[in-house]
Figure 1: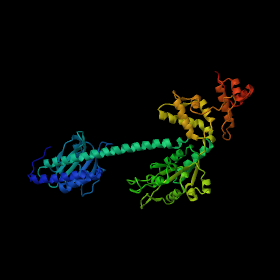
Figure 2 (figure 1 turned 45 degrees about the horizontal axis):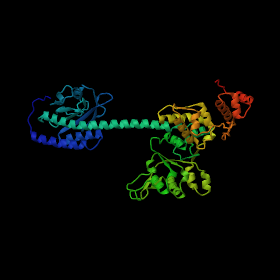
Figure 3 (figure 1 turned 45 degrees about the vertical axis):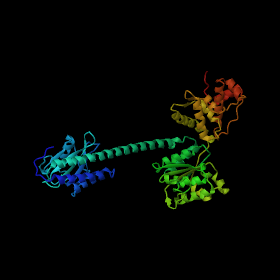
Length: 518
């Protein structure tokens, strides 16, 4: 760094001034992670306590590689943020290109001075120093003008600005790391949201029967709004899957989806779980705790088994649904939340209301939009698609590929499924465990506890009640199962079914069954 001869001033007072300024800069840098505000405060300290006017900080734009003016300290208007310098362009560009400090006695005499900002006094000196993070190339420039052209020891002023730049570099590095982590977290969050939406979206609810198509249509329509939804159906029919699909396809999808099984807790714990409690509200309440309603603010609260709550708690829940207000257990402050309610039950709430076991006003508050989930036995045509979908799901958990054979599916379709889809999934998981090669066949299903529809006595077993309109399909499946069991020998299959060879031949023809040659 070279500087022309200058008049001499008192170095001791300059040292004290710079020491005080460095102390104040260090305090500023420890206050906030907002980089722009921090840099602006540093320039203000240089102006107020170090006699360095018209400070400027430029930082590299990672996208273009240009120097972008981040902040400027000046009384004159400046377009910080819109002025850019390429490496080697002007005084500032030369600093970033060479990585050296530049000290100019009078900025008007510097041919590289571009004056793009229009804030500098052309009669005053100019000092620009690189901002360097670690041992790498400069990532920015810190520049300022001493107050007087008579200031002596410009080299000392340059070293002082270098110290400030070194302190500032650590804040720049930390801010960039925080921003990078924030972007990574945002990317991970968005990726998880997409994964969750794919897992809990419409594709997770399988079915093409008319009853299921009606469910899909209802879910698509109601997901758009904040309407309260009551999902009804037997245990194991997929009510929670529908609740997931509604939330993750709604405008609230980016907010919380909070679940609670209302039947799992007594009233005292249920109130604390839903509304939260204050410290000291009861024995063991050592800290304040937010309830499910607070955690679901702006999102969705899924209340499963809503028909199981007591009459006393129904009144407390009704107030929250009507007003959106509640108090924590042991608290006096009224809290207001914006929560969408999705409830589910396997009970006949109308009968519960008639018997006086469920509040009528709460029933109407919940039953704004009702979605009925059909039992699996009434949509047997969906079993093949469900079985393959669940096998894929189980295979992901077991980290292998699972395949369900046609003979296994035929056996599954003859079962009554009192436990609905949950029972089907459990059956397939047991069958997968019994299948070493990943092929779930008829034998694996039998080992999983599903009995064959063909009785051991040779006659047809009593089939489960068939859904309307699928009697022909059930008969076809029984004939195919008998043929498979008989090794595709028609005479044997006829004996198993209690038919004559002519009868089974007629059914093979009319039911369009392709006889295998073994």
